[in-house]
Length: 306
Ligand SMILES: Cc1cc2nc3c(=O)[nH]c(=O)nc-3n(C[C@H](O)[C@H](O)[C@H](O)COP(=O)(O)OP(=O)(O)OC[C@H]3O[C@@H](n4cnc5c(N)ncnc54)[C@H](O)[C@@H]3O)c2cc1C
Image (tube, rainbow, N blue to C red):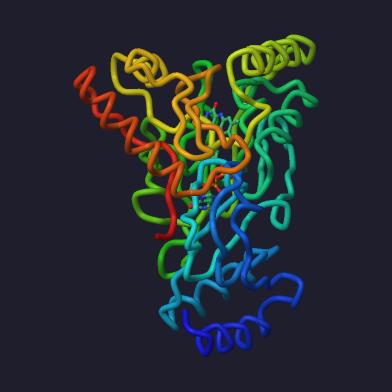
């Protein structure tokens, strides 16, 4: 986006959003849990469906590149930043409601809060999500999961925008959920709202299970360092972390990016990492693990820009 394109976009988007919802030259390290990455030319924080639709229509009609993010907990942005518009659907678009055994959440609602809301209403099914730091929209897109649970087990229906900014309602069967993937990813849909069906349970038991899963997380994962969670998908029949450990890479470091000593499936930012360090380490791990085990690891994290 050259400066004229940015100015034109600013002027038009000001007709849709308030000034405080339009940010320029935004450091993406402040919007991603890995805490690396350069600036995005523009970031928009729409707070309603009509705003999101109007923004997408404008961007489509004017061929402005854009990318939707939630909490940026599965995302690495290159050091050169993103030459386009980031649409962030997080706290700005996060209302929730509960009706009997159904929770409806806007895509920006934090999954952890929705999991707690379910517990407060004695609803079981989202215990697995108690420690996943993304938004509901990001979680549906990724079919996030842990400890034998995944989003596909609870999603009833998703309201999305398609590429032409049409509203579409997709039921679980239409979402083509797979291991850390969904039709949202493959067709670049935008998640607006998610309905989840849970089942009645005992509040204390639900809370105990969530506490236990979070305890296991704290014990196994390097939660005191910035990271993007598991960098790689679990290869069938293996564990990525174990393959990385067996390749001799526990604690291996490039620049400020390090294979976690606590969980080799995580890359942590020791404080000084650049996106280039993280990406170089990812490629190094893939190569070394392939040489030692014959398994080609696939990234779970998304890499943007470059
Ligand atoms: C410490 C830690 C632990 C983690 N543990 C787990 C775990 O146990 N299980 C697990 O599955 N993941 C885990 N993750 C990864 C991450 O939290 C999940 O993948 C989460 O679902 C991503 O949500 P997000 O809002 O942060 O998405 P982002 O990182 O912002 O985006 C991820 C992808 O989703 C897309 N996206 C986001 N929002 C939308 C939307 N509204 N519409 C369309 N596309 C969208 C983005 O374009 C991008 O492609 C962990 C991460 C960390 C840092």
